[in-house]
Image 1 (cartoon, rainbow, N blue to C red):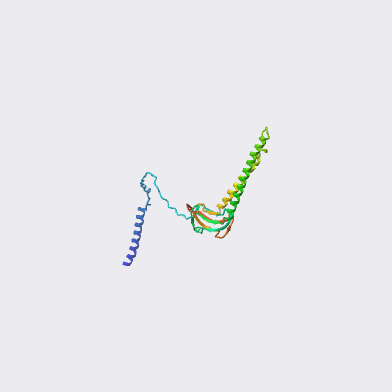
Image 2: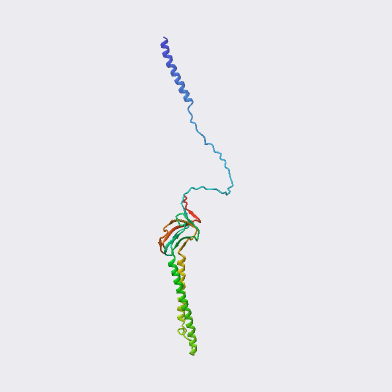
Length: 226
């Protein structure tokens, strides 16, 4: 009897509980939560007066040190090298005007003496031509020439030629003396020997490359910057 009563009561309780749950859900429908507008951000601003100031910028770069002045030392006279300075070596330092090399100057001394003799001969010829010109004027006056004597009679062309001979001889002598002076190869500036091409006993001619030199007063560095 109890079993039958339980079988009736349990389904009835389940049905009633289900009805109550359904009624509760219908009476309390779910509500969607809606977010309001986002809060406004509060911004604080600090103002500063701009003032110029020094700022050191560090930039990394690499370059090669090169001399500002680099040149080839060449011979301006011909002859055999008979003396070499101790500084005439790779890496050697020298000052402006230092004698780096000396050439055999005997041929050039002979040229100077020959040029001096030619100059003396030309000057003697000029003096003789001036005397002939004075004599020509005296002879013209003694002969009673009433008109002005021509330039040929007064030997003016011959005098001009004699003066030109003197000038030419002087120029030849100056050139010979200059060649003699150039047998001493001097440094054009204070610098250093980068490389040399000749040595003691070698015979050189005009424009022979003697060495590569560079000045030590200042250097340059090319630095590429990105």
